[in-house]
Image: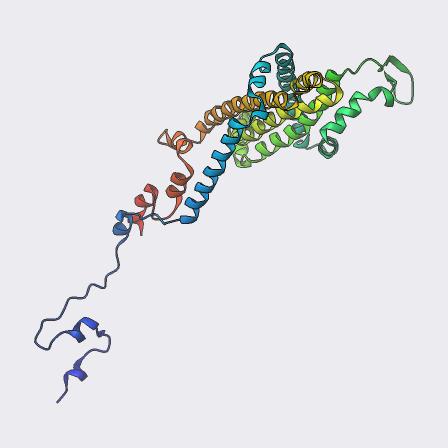
Length: 350
């Protein structure tokens, strides 16, 4: 005669509920099922508590409030003097020269940089070597040193000539009064911008998959049309941010031309405070103007980036704009497993 212990199947688990139940009570149902994917996706998310972030935010707000307080209450900043000289004629003249120098250098430097980038991407080894050597030497020398070399060109080459190397000279002219401060600043900064913009353009072109070009050429499109219609639109999202940073850096870098007596914004402020000895207020005038200009350039860069980001929209037509308008947290949530709408669409595939 078999007992109940011998008839029990070995695979049947012994549950705590049944062991705690009274002898005459019915068995307690056991809910040992795991939640399904749909239940996990529909569950309400509980954000993690991060007290360290709140503490750091409070500390930073207190420090920012202290900074604003000292700027407004310290009489040594002399904000009335700053307001009086902010729109003076010498300051505006220096501002106009700064803007002209930035625009001229950026335009000519970028044109030269595109040519250098094309040389580096060409199949000719001589062109690649020469372009690489140019980028290497220009990026190795500080811009201020380049300006000083061009400004002192007459001491190195009193005369310049055109002709046959080691032979007859056809045209000769003196360089004593050729390179003024403005021309030396223009040439030096243009050569510097050309080296950096060449690498920006080259990197943007290389970011495009080569299969795009091969597929377009297989359809019979010419090389120039492939570059204008396929390669360049896809390279622009990678080129624009770096080019915007280069432009903003160039605007601030024009202040070094004051070393060679070019009357830009900073040098105009220096000329004034050398007469009235109001050093800090005049430096604040130049600083505020630089802040205003860089802010405007940053806003323009934002809209240009958003314009070229439209090419990355999905099939729905609004994916790119929606991604551009979302914050970092929303973008992260959309790409994490179990937290985005995309993962909800894939729940039925498991």
